[in-house]
Amino acid sequence: MNILIVLTYYNPYKSGLTIYAERQAQALAALGHDVTVLTSQFDPDLPLNELAQGVNIIRLPIAFRLSKGVIMPGIFSTAWKLIGESDLVNLHLPQGDAALVGILAKIRNKLLVSTYHCDIKMPAGLINKLAGWGAVLSNHISASLSDALVQNTRDFSENSKFLKRYLNKVTVIQPPIVVVPVSEEEIAQFVEKFEIDSSRKIIGMVARLASEKGVEYLVDAVPEVLMHVDNAQVIFVGNYQNVIGEQAYKAKILPMIENLGERWKFLGIISETEKAAFFQLCDVLVLPSINSTESFGMVQVEGMTCGTPVVATDLPGVRQPVLSSGMGKIVPVKDSHALAEGILDVLNSSDRYDGEKLTALKEHFSPETVAKEYQTLYQELMRSDG
Image (tube, rainbow, N blue to C red; front, side, top):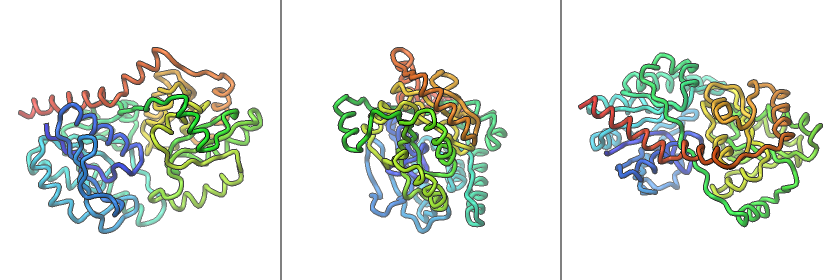
C-alpha cells in the first residue's frame, strides 16, 4: 500500500503530534508499506528530501509563518503529485493545510483518513485568533471529507466540541508509545552528565514550555510539596527556550520558576536513551495540562512503562491512562493545591510497578500494534470503497 502522511511539523520538531506521526510512519514502513511524509522545512538547514527508517520525507520551504502555522507555496503542486501516486492519504490534525490536501485527495478519488490529535486554543492577539479560526475551518472541511477519523480515546472524542459532530466516523486507535531499553551504566552516565542528585525525590515533567501544559500550576504546587518533602526537586525535560508561538508564555513563566532556585532544574531536549534513564529516576511524573489541546499525554504512558506513577489532570482522554492502569492519581484541572496533594500521595506511597502490568502496557501501545490497527482500518476502507 502506498500511504501519504501529511502534517505541518515532523521530526526533528518535537511535540506529541510529531512523535506520534514519526512512530506511526516508521511502523507502517516496517510492515512493508511505502510511506511518504509531506511536511514543512521549518528549519532551513533541514534537507528537502530524506529517507529515514524506511520513510520518504519530503519537506517544503516556508514562505512565512502565521502564528504556529506556516505558509508553503509549493504544497499544491507537490501534494497533487504525491496524492496521485498514493492509495490513501492520512492527515494529522490540527493542520492549516488540511482542507487543501483533503480537497485534492477527493478530486483524485483517494481515500482520506484524518488522525485528530487535539482541539485548537490560540494565544491572545488578532493574528493568532484569525489563524486559529482558519485552522479550525480547514480541519472541519477535511473532517467532513474524511472517510474515517482516528482518535486516541472515545472519552476525548465525546467531549471534544470539534469531534462531537463526527462521532460516526471515529475509530479509536491508541497512540504508538515506546521507550528504549536503558542499562544501569547508561543511567549512571545520565546522572553524571546532568548532575542529578538521585538522593532527592524527583518530580518529573516532560513537555514543551507551552501555555496548555499548565506549568504554572506545578510551579505554584512546589512550595506546598516542599513543606512535607523537603528534598523534592522538579526536573523539566523538553524545549523551554524556543517554542514556536510561546514567547509571551515563556516571559511570564520563567521569572516564577527562577524564584524556586535549585528546586527546579531544566534539562532541555535530551536523547531517547537519556529520557528512558530519566523515567527510571523519577519518583513521580506530572502532567498538569489545562485544556483540550492535550487529548492524551503520551509521555505519561512512557513513564508508566518504566514503572513510574503519574499525577495527571482530570481532562477527557488525559485521565484514561491512569484510570485504566491504576498507576497514579487524577487531580482537578488548574488546581495547584490538589496537584500538590496528588504528588505527595504518590511520593509518600513510594509505589513503583513492574512485571506483567508493564509488559501488557508495552505490547498494547507498541508502534507495531498501532500500525497493524491502522493497517486494518485502511484495508477495511479500501474494501468498502472497492
